[in-house]
Length: 302
Image (cartoon, rainbow, N blue to C red; front, side, top):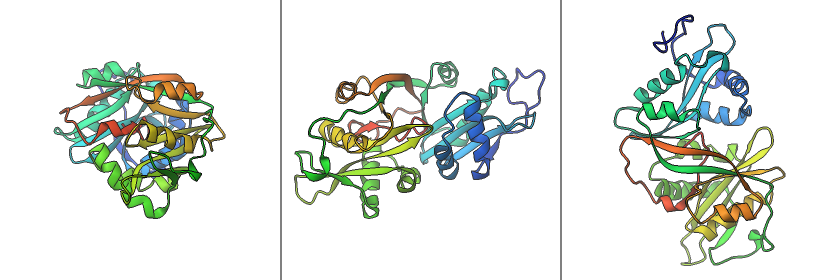
């Protein structure tokens, strides 16, 4: 296969589907590009998503990789688009993206988190910016009244999730996101370090109205996501419940143009660090109740 027309000196193998047996190769490619190894996240993606890769002609692992996650027949996301440093500027990124878009289907809306480096390619492929994203990172400083587990506030009671809560979490998430994220969320209890839920105070019997998870991102940070809540107060209580138990810096990805959480996160010790943009290709249909979506599962799962 010629992955792109500008190859002159190397013939690349065809793009192929990757599976759990390619975990070490994906981890090595992340390290090659200066990313964290993220072994646990790669294991999740290889098990739950469609991962496409190109083997390196020199026999040293992968030349490139990209992840397609389907949220339904007409909705998908792109993540972990990586090309080995030694094979840069040879069209592999475009070849992988074009392959992924064909797999997603012409009628699908596809979203991604774009870095400044990748944005020009995505624009050429028809993606448009829809909002900004900022990673707030640091050691969380809890407020004085951070003991969520022993009191019921106006927003409700925050507690640790149990296995019995999963159906309610899936239903809540689908209503907020506007599509079924069950292929990832059903694996969340095994992947995440902690999951917290919010039980409504009023009306009685409403049940779970918010949830959040925290998972380990190598080498030493705790990522909070997804974060689904009925309002800002509820979102802050869920974040606090998870962040106060973190023994490492916490990362929380937020839309800086929404007023509810960025200022609060900064005041709690999470400073704005990495910035990127969320882009979409396809019909811009408003889905779910986006005002209840405060943080993504991961920037690999837009």
